[in-house]
Image 1 (cartoon, rainbow, N blue to C red):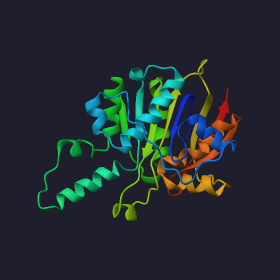
Image 2 (cartoon, one colour):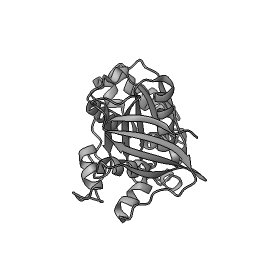
Image 3 (cartoon, one colour):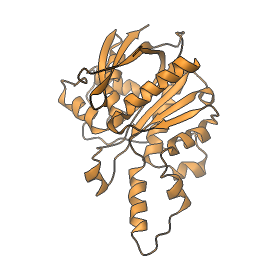
Image 4 (cartoon, one colour):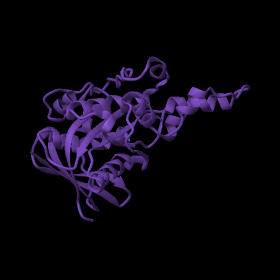
Length: 266
């Protein structure tokens, strides 16, 4: 395939021991140690009205935290950005509560439980928080969801010639769902991608499909984190961005197919 190209203008990260992109970059560059026992601290999305803010669960908070950080760094207007939201699942705690309710003697679901159960809930809350009216796509590709979201975002930038926000996120499930889907903790990552270089550009990114093996961290803690959450499959790309050097990484995507990504800082 012809490589898809864009220019990164903003980065957002939230995860266990990673409060934001500067902290994540320091850990990836081994300038700081990550507390491997720390849980992801998810802030309440202050951009939402109080009523909606109270209804949000971990998946919405992870997505919005990463998205707001990336957009703030880019300096762009959030409402004007097209968006791609990518996740392998949704709000696991909410799913668990729904299952418990349906198995009870009074199987009556609240409207909040229902509307938070849909896969596009984070995209909906983002539009409320930012008053975004641009197109928004939501997709799922199991453990390859980040790579799928990156491909979709790059394709949109290439075809439409407009800046696009990519947000990838997943959160953990309580037992017994955790046995079937053992995601360790919440993780979110966001990128603002633009069609042309500018004074806001952090790096140029190109991606193409490959059958090469996916990147594996030599550091055991980082590799465990990479495998702990589908959105954390972005960590090799984030490490390349943190280094600020021209480099190439291969990301997990589908069985037999991975995504080769070239980074060229500007």
